[in-house]
View 1 (cartoon, rainbow, N blue to C red):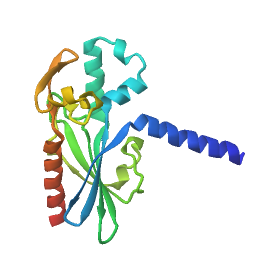
View 2 (view 1 turned 120 degrees about the vertical axis):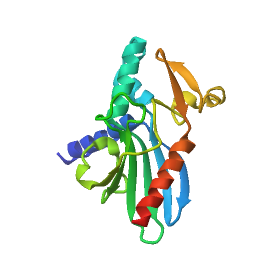
View 3 (view 1 turned 180 degrees about the vertical axis):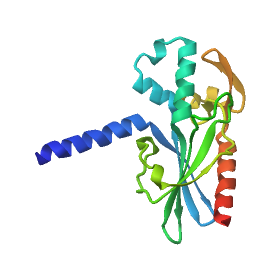
Length: 190
């Protein structure tokens, strides 16, 4: 029985890891905090979750991407205070209540969760201490997507491209990082 429980736990962890499709994209220091930044690539996740994603029409792909982005995390900033070792998280995720705007993201300030916190678990609402509605994060394409890993596609960052039948701007990570640092500084003043 213990072997089955261990196997199921391992399987759950591996499945969770496989579906999270997260990558560490940045590490920096701001004030007393060491910050690690993780990106959840929506296109990788959609391709993994929906095996027929590539065969869908452009409209269906666009709708699936928009729905996913409105309901899931995009960036996770893990702040570790260098003095107290306290960990808090800032999660940039879609806000399903905001429609018909490209600025539909919100920033959740999360405390009192484990160091291996995964916002895809969606069972942490009691740990959110604040929600910030104004985040300089908009649209559906982001520099950190695997789509822009090649040198040729890196040149598209900051520009508009056509994807799934629509012109979309590829938002640079630097714009999001600047906005988050501003919000961190505002939170630390309180």
